[in-house]
Length: 89
Length: 194
Image 1 (cartoon, chains in turn cyan, yellow):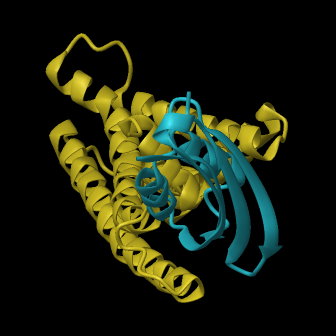
Image 2: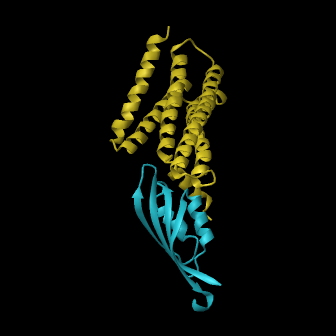
Image 3: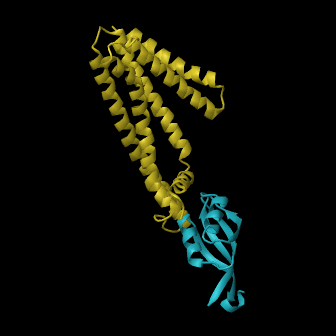
């Protein structure tokens, strides 16, 4: 079984909630998630952001759900770092 | 899982409803206080009228203000929020009904309606309170209509002070400004009373 260590996501989100609240909601999906939130482009009602998440065992479904519950839309997974369970130690 | 309080705050933040609710509270609270003051002044300058008649008239107006504030705010806010959600959905090219924005569009009109309706109702009840006390306590030391008018003027002054804090105007100046409006209203009622 593979464990996800890093994800780089391309997300479209409304201006509200702001980046801090958005990143916090994603970080709260795990105990040790480290989230980097970068605005790539701003439109009248939306903004395109790059979200980098690092953690020991990232739960993709929970993150996707958190993004959607904040009104965001996951456009693409641009980068992943996955380890097999045996390599995680 | 977000706690209810935090979730509620998030919904208010997303919909930028803090300022709207505050504005509704002041505007409708002011409406309620000035309406009560008007009724009380009208009775004060008129022929001698029983206290129960004054209380009934004030209570009727207070309830009407509360119901009117609640229903009008809900209808208009619900329509506005629905349109905002549709615009955002069209920009996001996705359905947002299950997101925080969808929940905010459903919850915020109810919250704003509650603020809009309860502000005039509660403020009116505070102004009516001296009349109610005087009607059940014969030893009430003040003239009932005068004391109710004094409470109304005090509340109107405090609403001005509250507005002054928001606009960072001097509290006394802001309070006096709303008080002048109330006193002018009393003057007009005096002039119009046959």
